[in-house]
Amino acid sequence: MNNEERAKLRTLLNYWIEHNNEHSQEFREWADKAKAFGEAKAGEEMVQAAQEMNKASKFLSQALRRLEE
Image 1: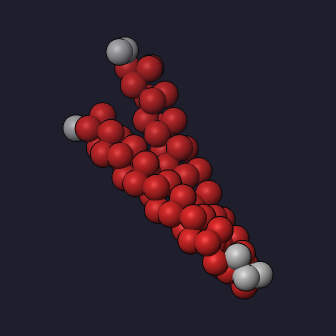
Image 2 (image 1 turned 120 degrees about the vertical axis):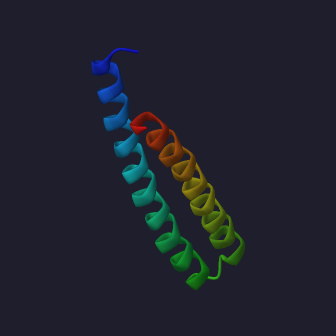
């Protein structure tokens, strides 16, 4: 991987991490709304999706750190 590709990958990783975090927050907000509508199970599943999105971001962050070493 050349320096240009490495820089692009770092940019993409930062973008993906931020994007995932935004989605995770949005999932949680809508999960609360679903629960308020009486859709507790759907809300719980949305919270699980948010948690999985956070896990993905954690792995992406680890990859980014490795590239920056």
